[in-house]
Length: 153
Image (cartoon, rainbow, N blue to C red; front, side, top):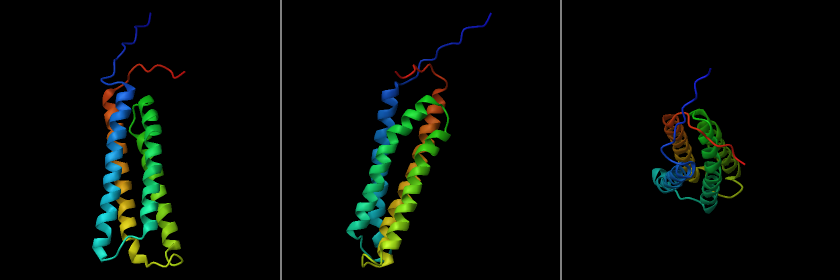
């Protein structure tokens, strides 16, 4: 006769978990993007072209769309790797692709390569924030352990 599996009640609901970590990402992502765009031009006495600000905001908006999807996946599986695989790596690839495109288009848009320092720093900080956020979400969910999760209807 098999022993019944004890049911563990999670310390927070799925909605509360998702709301908390989504708000953390909104603040961390915006802060890293703004810091990169603000500090980058001061490093080499340049300016941010308007297109680099638009590209940085576009990558940030894409990350805002990925965050809730990642949190749903992490809630189902108490591992650290889904947060990193489903969020940090795609955000990092969007950052790299956006920098490659902007580097390629810089001369045709008539601005020097040195004016991309703000965008490069913003993308680097956004990726670093995404990686730290993904690891923190995975660790927090792993600490909750195995819990009884109702199947989605």
